[in-house]
Image 1: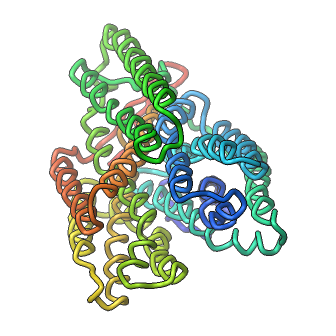
Image 2: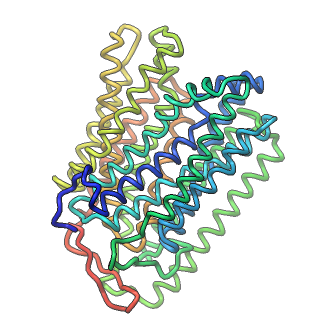
Image 3: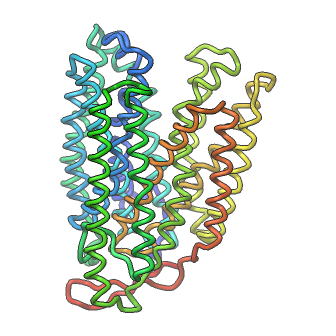
Length: 489
């Protein structure tokens, strides 16, 4: 397998078929997840939504994705990506259909909150792709998976308004959204039929405990606990944003209840991590089975800046262009779409560069470009030629999404049997970053918002200097108790 070149058109190769099967599954989850966005005008008219209610729906759409990515990562490591991805696609249809059938704003809010779980589908393919591709190609393969799959949100924006028009009538938008659920359900069945966790004859390594990430030292255990806290802080920020002093989706009593629930869940998760690792560390971790949690923490920060800023900027960029250059909403949205379109080439490009020139060096260079790009975007004003503003935005977008590709070119090379959980935590940090940056935007002007992201990139860049370049082999123990070595560099 490792002696073949990565030819995406060679459909006779099982790993290439698996790659296409996987990115299309991820693509469909993004179509379902963001099916509401291009039809928000229909929703606003049908339910007479206020601007605050629309903002609340947008926040609810990403809220559950933060914990869901951690949960899905654990399930993938325990049960395998084939079963988890197929089941997730099929279950995604249920809240999707419920959303399409909603008759009140409350139903819209609840079903949109549940739809956030679909956004965790990304994590599944990270483990799956790493099982099928060698280290020297895994960056490009993961980049194709992530970049082409992410394009599902843009595909939804392009196709769903036309599909709603094709169905026609006041309920055209309902049928359009329901159709995405049907596609997800059918593809889930197809995925269960055609996908395999590993190539024939290969072992699928599972963690001893999937309820919490295993670490190798007591120092790493405290590091892991500390890095888990920001994810729950991001959830508390969401509850605050939706509460009576902001978007007023619910009252103070509900806000207090939700905050208490999140704090309780944090306590349960941290105690579970402590219990699992106390037993794990008590037995002693053999030298060949150790990994450094520092690697995970650094990738957390890098993905928070890259994917976190992408989600935040995609949310605000159409209005930014519209207001800055006095454009129509349609024109502003069209110009801003160039930012998302870069996913098709930038994320695979970042993975390829990482494979070719080294993980640490590539990520550092891409973060530098991201930092400069957002610094440049902070200077965009009404006196700029529109074409120049669009070019600056797309250049910045290239480094952002290539950086995402470089992050996940490294994730599968840390510890194979824990790849799902590591990918879940890193992915959750991306969503948490979006919450943080969008919260910052509510207090500052867009120019300052871009500078805050640039400053965050500088912090991540400093952290990357401590990243250890994956090299040699990582060891895993198969079902027969024998040690197998997996090449990582």
